[in-house]
Image (cartoon, rainbow, N blue to C red):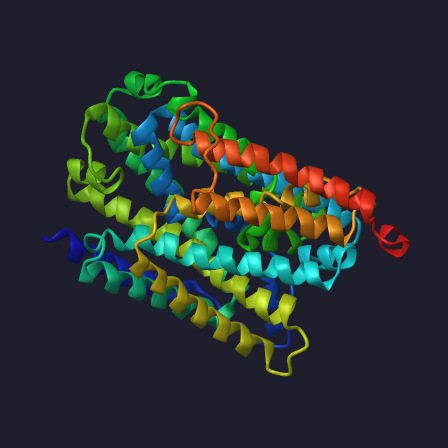
Length: 454
């Protein structure tokens, strides 16, 4: 049987299951369900639901694909490099816990209070770019199981997957996302166990662990990039940060810490799919070809993994764009907020899928966008220092955007080491240093007014 037809069957069953388990927002607290993930009785998500949701929404289809790709290219150092990004949970959890203890109800509330309305709008534009990225970078990975890139099956699948996710997320918004996330997290954990049950016995575990070179050119340069970016990267991703304001602060901190540890472990283990491909000399696509080498059963599991991880991220992306538009950016509109949120979800799905026709590279969704937001590093790491005002914020954030744009357009030729990511490392190190410099300079030249320091 053609594997592509099997994949369509998997998609149909998976979609029907998610629609069935997804709750609808209704009753007197429908908006709290749709925008804050509460249940019909008005209760916050419990520890299991919150931790599952936080974790699976960051185990993207693009993430498992990138983990396998980097494992294939660099061996174990490549897997470690991508796993380091999951330390973002520890950074975000700690910083947002501190902000919540000071009474801030959201990141937008913090930025508006400290830096003014202009800061909120600039930050919102960055979030819109990030959320748009999440749509195309995940549908690319899932669609490749339905046909080669740029084939008819590939494009049809990308639109079908997006429509499927919309079918269940439009029902209940954030509540639908959290409930389906718990189901998807369990599925992802079981599938990972089964996939590794194929990989390790059939391969050479010792050779896989020893694979690669712990040098800058062997992938260590990307490890260093990740260690620099985790201090800003999580704050431009509402898929993560929205979940930091759903429960009481201490539960949130515990959930984020556990999700960070489990996330590092999950991504590192999945990178062994690509490492096995490298050691055995399979070649081709790190996930699809590795699975194909074992036959239809592993192809089946790999496709379900991609659907599970991808759909969990896309549904969270849709719930985040709904909240961003209807609650954070346009709270004063007379239109029903749920209707406005649903309209923004559909529009984002269309715009995200149109990007596939430009043939982007999925890793750029992490490396380029991660560089564009390095200007947020001092904004959040120095959030307790109240001398900095709007001038500091805008100087740092705009400089970070300049470095991200320069990276994508290859304006900078500096490099650290001779590895593939030497230029990326140089741009991030120099960029963050300068962002801190202008942030501090702005606080000295145009400090925050006394009322903003209070």
